[in-house]
Length: 77
Image 1 (cartoon, rainbow, N blue to C red):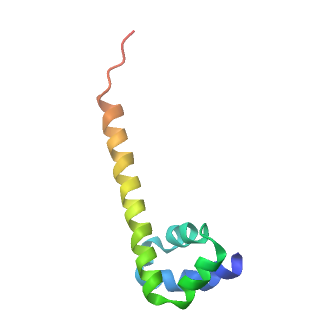
Image 2 (cartoon, rainbow, N blue to C red):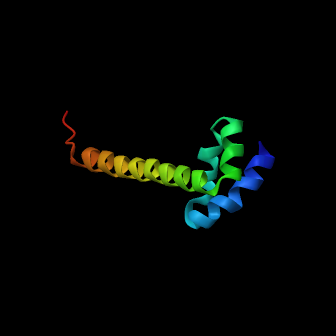
């Protein structure tokens, strides 16, 4: 798995330099044959990187919404 990550990281970094670590980790959770396909197919990799970024952005948006909701809660005794 580490070898795949070492091959995948620089490819991901071309598309998302700021989030390459996180996106590479997300992609490495996929099936090994799918990861190999991404390494060999720049178009497929670009698509998966975009999907991973959408998930990350949704996650960040969800966290900020939760923070806002928690901040608006009143504690009562």
